[in-house]
Image (cartoon, rainbow, N blue to C red; front, side):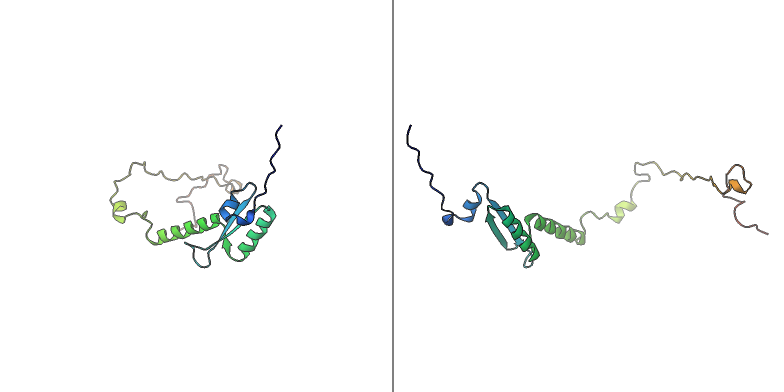
Length: 143
C-alpha cells in the first residue's frame, strides 16, 4: 500500500464570498435595504456555516428595516399592481361595449325569485294552513 497524502486544510481567508458560499454546509444569506430604494436596494450579505448565527443576523437586519428577497419581490409586485390599477389597469370595461351588447348575451333570463310564504307564527293565530297571503289581505284595514 502506498503512503496516504495528508489533506491540506483550505485557507478560507483567501476565498471570495462566492467561493465560500459554494463550500458544503455554508449558508449564503442576503438581505435588502428598502429604506433607500425599493427597485434597486443595497444588499447586505452573510456567508456562515452556523445556522444560529444566520438566524440571529436575519432577525437583527429585519429589525433595522431590511427585507429578504422573497419579501422584496412581494412588495415590488404589490406596488406594480397598485400602479397598474391607478393607470386604468387595461381591464376596465368600455361603456360602449357594455351598452351595445345583444340582449341576453347568450344567457337565459333570470327567473323570479322563489319565495317561501310559510310563516310559522301565522299557524298559531287561527290560520291552520300556515300560509300567509302577501296581497290584498295583508296590512291594516282600509275604509
